[in-house]
Amino acid sequence: MSTSSDLEAMKAETIVETGSENIPDVQHPTLAAKPAGNSLIKHVVAFLGEFFGTFIFLWTAFVIAQIANQLPDIPAAGQGSSPGQLLMISFGFGFGVMVGVFIFFRVSGGNLNPAVTLTLVLAKAVPPVRGVVMVVAQMIAGMAAAGAASAMTPGEIAFTNGLGGGASRARGVFIEAFATALLCLTVLFLAVEKAKATFMAPFVIGIALFLGHLIAVYYTGAGLNPARSFGPCIAASSFPDYHWIYWVGPLLGSVIAFGIWKTFKILEYELVNPGQDSDK
Image: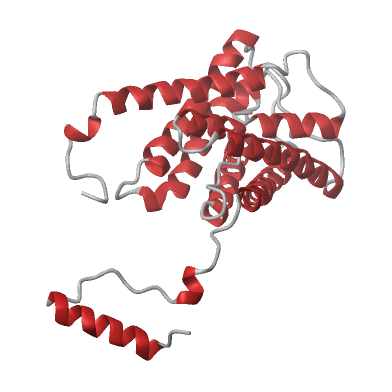
């Protein structure tokens, strides 16, 4: 077996022959023999990362939304909105996703949302099979988080999505789509594109979701995430007949975001403002 002194001797001989020590590091035989891991294990890790990340995000947000929807100054249906309620719910989801992404982005990428995963699959940042694994984990986590939040808080479930403010189903679809597109664009340009601001991606993703909720809560309840919308319906054993808008809207938004990002990639946007990427 090679020892550290043997490795140093090999390096010294190379320096004599080449006149430089700028050579690839000699890997320790034990490390070289270590397997990289098979695909099944990687899928399991991705599944667990997305499950726990999504659970932490949604459980936190659901409990905060449950509290916010009990505030005494909430106007009756059709009589306006409550700024305190909107801010509390928006902060809950924005900070919840921020924490989830910060913790698990190094494990599974921290998608925590089937719409985000679809965008990344379209962008070829996530393989299709891995994407399916992640979406399954997110959906299960959404149901688990809703069940846990419901069990831990008294009263009826108050964090399901629903149309309000006079919004029609068509308006609801496009509000959901545009707010989700804002989130997905943030992911594509800050997380998929490796730039100087990439380290801030979880923080900005949280802000994007916060803004999306400020826009959408009053009109649709702000789904922006099929796992977020589906879980509470399962926990409440009740689905509105327009539940489909919380799938069509976010998935449409993810496609819109991909189309915008892909257009800029085809046009080689990097050449317009060079020197911005971290590897330049």
